Image (cartoon, rainbow, N blue to C red):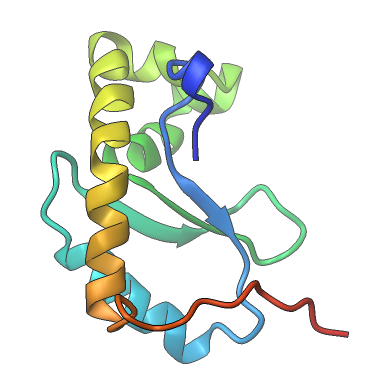
Length: 120
Protein backbone atom coordinates (compact mmCIF):
# COMPACT_ATOMS: atom_id res chain seq x y z
CA UNK A 1 0.00 0.00 0.00
CA UNK A 2 2.27 2.77 1.27
CA UNK A 3 4.93 3.45 3.87
CA UNK A 4 3.51 5.78 6.56
CA UNK A 5 6.89 7.33 7.31
CA UNK A 6 7.51 7.91 3.56
CA UNK A 7 4.05 8.74 2.24
CA UNK A 8 5.40 10.72 -0.72
CA UNK A 9 7.75 8.00 -1.93
CA UNK A 10 5.04 6.78 -4.33
CA UNK A 11 1.24 7.05 -4.42
CA UNK A 12 -0.62 4.40 -2.43
CA UNK A 13 -2.03 1.40 -4.25
CA UNK A 14 -2.51 -2.37 -4.03
CA UNK A 15 -0.32 -4.96 -5.73
CA UNK A 16 -1.35 -8.63 -5.78
CA UNK A 17 -1.89 -11.84 -7.73
CA UNK A 18 -4.92 -14.10 -8.14
CA UNK A 19 -4.73 -17.87 -8.13
CA UNK A 20 -7.71 -18.05 -10.49
CA UNK A 21 -8.51 -14.56 -11.73
CA UNK A 22 -11.10 -14.95 -14.48
CA UNK A 23 -14.42 -14.20 -12.82
CA UNK A 24 -13.07 -12.44 -9.73
CA UNK A 25 -11.06 -9.98 -11.82
CA UNK A 26 -14.08 -8.90 -13.85
CA UNK A 27 -16.15 -8.44 -10.69
CA UNK A 28 -13.35 -6.52 -8.97
CA UNK A 29 -12.84 -4.34 -12.04
CA UNK A 30 -16.50 -3.30 -11.99
CA UNK A 31 -16.30 -2.77 -8.22
CA UNK A 32 -13.27 -0.47 -8.56
CA UNK A 33 -14.90 1.46 -11.43
CA UNK A 34 -17.99 2.07 -9.27
CA UNK A 35 -16.00 3.38 -6.28
CA UNK A 36 -16.64 7.06 -5.52
CA UNK A 37 -13.75 8.44 -3.50
CA UNK A 38 -11.46 11.43 -3.62
CA UNK A 39 -9.79 9.94 -6.70
CA UNK A 40 -10.83 7.74 -9.58
CA UNK A 41 -9.17 4.32 -9.22
CA UNK A 42 -8.28 1.72 -11.82
CA UNK A 43 -7.28 -1.95 -11.79
CA UNK A 44 -4.93 -3.38 -14.41
CA UNK A 45 -2.34 -6.05 -15.03
CA UNK A 46 1.15 -4.75 -14.34
CA UNK A 47 3.20 -4.52 -17.55
CA UNK A 48 6.52 -4.70 -15.68
CA UNK A 49 6.33 -8.12 -14.05
CA UNK A 50 7.03 -11.62 -15.30
CA UNK A 51 3.89 -12.97 -13.66
CA UNK A 52 0.38 -11.66 -13.94
CA UNK A 53 0.43 -9.18 -11.09
CA UNK A 54 -2.52 -6.86 -10.63
CA UNK A 55 -2.41 -3.24 -9.56
CA UNK A 56 -5.16 -1.07 -8.09
CA UNK A 57 -4.03 2.53 -8.14
CA UNK A 58 -5.32 6.05 -8.75
CA UNK A 59 -6.22 6.52 -12.42
CA UNK A 60 -4.02 9.64 -12.60
CA UNK A 61 -1.02 7.51 -11.59
CA UNK A 62 -1.87 4.84 -14.16
CA UNK A 63 -2.14 7.41 -16.96
CA UNK A 64 1.03 9.19 -15.84
CA UNK A 65 2.90 5.89 -16.19
CA UNK A 66 1.82 5.80 -19.84
CA UNK A 67 3.49 9.15 -20.55
CA UNK A 68 6.74 9.35 -22.49
CA UNK A 69 8.32 11.38 -19.69
CA UNK A 70 7.73 8.51 -17.26
CA UNK A 71 9.12 5.90 -19.66
CA UNK A 72 12.34 7.91 -19.94
CA UNK A 73 13.17 8.42 -16.24
CA UNK A 74 10.53 6.37 -14.34
CA UNK A 75 9.79 9.32 -12.02
CA UNK A 76 6.10 10.00 -11.31
CA UNK A 77 6.88 13.35 -9.66
CA UNK A 78 8.12 14.68 -12.99
CA UNK A 79 4.96 13.64 -14.80
CA UNK A 80 2.38 14.59 -12.16
CA UNK A 81 4.30 17.70 -11.02
CA UNK A 82 2.24 19.92 -8.69
CA UNK A 83 -0.53 17.33 -8.24
CA UNK A 84 1.87 14.60 -7.04
CA UNK A 85 1.62 15.33 -3.29
CA UNK A 86 -2.15 15.85 -3.47
CA UNK A 87 -2.57 12.50 -5.22
CA UNK A 88 -0.43 10.78 -2.56
CA UNK A 89 -2.49 12.31 0.25
CA UNK A 90 -5.88 11.70 -1.37
CA UNK A 91 -4.96 8.10 -2.21
CA UNK A 92 -4.12 7.45 1.45
CA UNK A 93 -7.46 8.97 2.49
CA UNK A 94 -9.27 6.73 -0.02
CA UNK A 95 -7.70 3.44 1.10
CA UNK A 96 -10.07 2.67 4.03
CA UNK A 97 -13.08 3.79 1.96
CA UNK A 98 -12.01 1.66 -1.00
CA UNK A 99 -11.45 -1.37 1.25
CA UNK A 100 -14.91 -0.91 2.79
CA UNK A 101 -16.44 -0.55 -0.69
CA UNK A 102 -14.81 -3.83 -1.78
CA UNK A 103 -15.98 -5.61 1.37
CA UNK A 104 -19.55 -4.44 0.80
CA UNK A 105 -19.47 -5.22 -2.93
CA UNK A 106 -18.39 -8.82 -2.29
CA UNK A 107 -20.50 -9.09 0.91
CA UNK A 108 -17.46 -9.78 3.09
CA UNK A 109 -18.26 -7.54 6.07
CA UNK A 110 -19.35 -10.37 8.39
CA UNK A 111 -17.42 -13.29 6.95
CA UNK A 112 -14.53 -14.96 8.71
CA UNK A 113 -11.36 -14.13 6.82
CA UNK A 114 -8.66 -16.75 6.39
CA UNK A 115 -5.05 -16.19 5.40
CA UNK A 116 -4.43 -16.94 1.72
CA UNK A 117 -3.03 -20.31 0.76
CA UNK A 118 -0.23 -20.69 -1.72
CA UNK A 119 -1.12 -23.19 -4.43
CA UNK A 120 1.25 -26.06 -5.10
